[in-house]
Structures are given as structure tokens and as C-alpha cells.
Image 1 (cartoon, rainbow, N blue to C red):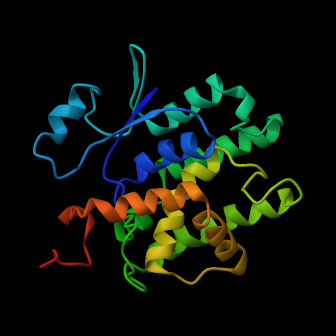
Image 2 (image 1 turned 135 degrees about the horizontal axis):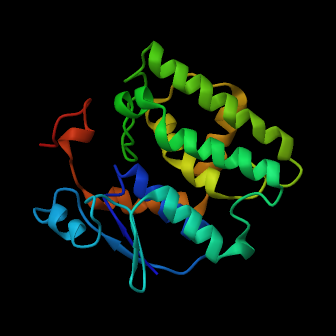
Length: 219
């Protein structure tokens, strides 16, 4: 399989698919595309009708939505148990991922993912706080599975990959969080795959103005 991704400092959607594969030790070839490349859109449109990343390519099949990619990977690598094995827990995990996939607009717009930045206090408003509180409530549910592992449903799965960009947001903007949420952030940041992503992001040396509402271009 091949995974086409965008800039690692900014591309939250790319991170979800990349981390799911990397943390699960599923072999794939990474094809990085810089957002600032003049032919970025043209190259992506050759692979995807919507012109966005990530794109998973498996033979003659191209999948261009991160949730669809997650479902495809989970189905084809069932031994990885990327969704909970319990039917009710699986339904809950899918609901949580769908909520992340289509919601939390205030957090997304005011606190864009910026892996290499430290911007404590920036982006906060009451609507963002509502999103933060809801996410913290979701994460508090991992206490039920503490005996089986540190992740949201015990073992690493799709739902953790889906919230990985939020982990980077909280690391960058440092909003006030309950202790349980802070623990989850710290645990996720220690994952070798997350550290590898951050190291690659630091080497990109890329500035995308649309994703930088709080910083000027480097001189």
C-alpha cells in the first residue's frame, strides 16, 4: 500500500491515516507532498477526485477519505483489532470517530494543528472551550479500559489515531485540561510513531500562511 500525505506540521487528516498504519506496524510506502509545492493540487487531483490528502493507494484502488481509509485498513488487517471486538464498544468507538470527523469546528478553526509551534493561550474562546470540554469527556471514558491498556479503548485503535491531531493541538496551545486528559496527551506524545512524525515535521521547514493565524513568516 501507498499513503499520500500532506505537510506533517499541518496536515491533521494525514496524521490520522499515517499513525494508524505506523503504530499498528502495517507496511506501507509514504508519499509526502508539500502544501507549498506549486503542483500540489495537480498531483493530488491525479489520484483523488476531491484533490485532498490523505489518499491510500492499494493496487488500482484509491481511497481518499481518512475515515474510509481507517475502515479499509481495519477490515484488511482484522488481526490488529483496530476497532474494539465487543459490538457495543465498537459502535461507540465508531460514533466517537464520526463525531471527530464531522464536528469540533471551533477547535479546528481557532487552534489549527501546528506540530512544531508553542502558542499557549492562543485561539481560546467560549466555543472552543465547549469543544475542549466535550473531548475531555470522551477521553475520560478510557478509565473503563485501564486494565487492558492506556488507549481510549484499552489497546491502540482507530479512535486514538483520530484524536492524535487534537493531542498536538493541546500540546501547542496548552488549554486548561483535567488531569485525565493531560495524562492521555502525555502518553500519546511518547509514542515512537508520534515522535517520528514530529521529527519529520521539524525537518520540513515549511510555512503555510492559511495554517498560521498566530505567527508571521520566518525572516
